[in-house]
Amino acid sequence: MSSEPLSTRDRILQAAIQLFVDQGIRRVSMDDVARRSGVSRVTLYRYFADRESLVRAAFFSPIAALEQLQDEMTDDGDVSVEGALMSIGERIAGQPAIDLPVHRDELETLYPRLAAEYSERRDAIAHRLISWIFDLADRSGRLRPGVRQDLIEGVIWDLMVNPHAIPAVRHSGLPARELYATLIDVLLHGMLTDTT
Image 1 (cartoon, one colour):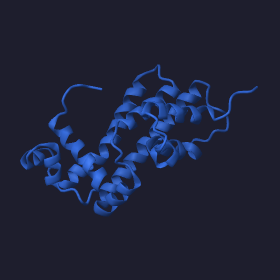
Image 2 (image 1 turned 180 degrees about the horizontal axis):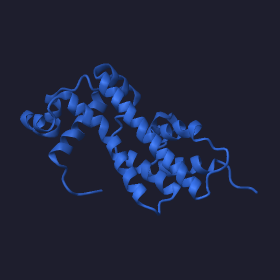
Image 3 (image 1 turned 120 degrees about the vertical axis):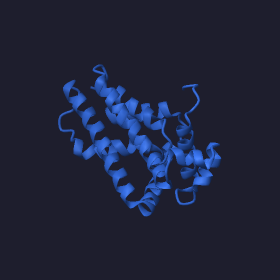
């Protein structure tokens, strides 16, 4: 983890995300965000012209992080399927949990156009990343015949993006890296040992 101090913009954004997660979008004012981030209202408005632009930045920052990861991974010719999935898991684990369904429902109510754009971009990056992983598995000769991407793409993505929606996972107490390593192992290799 970097020891460099956060930029003012990032500090504001982290404060806003934490407030949105804790209190919901509707209940958080620009004054709340300024207070939590330790900046004046003038400084806050210098970075985010209005509440909607702040909400946009909060919701879209995890998507931007995944888009950046996709660029990094496609430039790395030496990445494995396991490595790619682990990188996705680590990148997701490093993001605030703003993608919970309750927050998306609230986003839809408050900012319907923003919610539609968010869903479109989120679905697009999910499809691109999973397609890239399937292609990587196929090119390396590791994709099992008969596995249909269209059937399991949503399952993989939901498990990777929001594993804590599953009560057993939420209560497991596993650190993020161990949690994703376990999920990836089961996704790729199943739960049975090879007894052939």
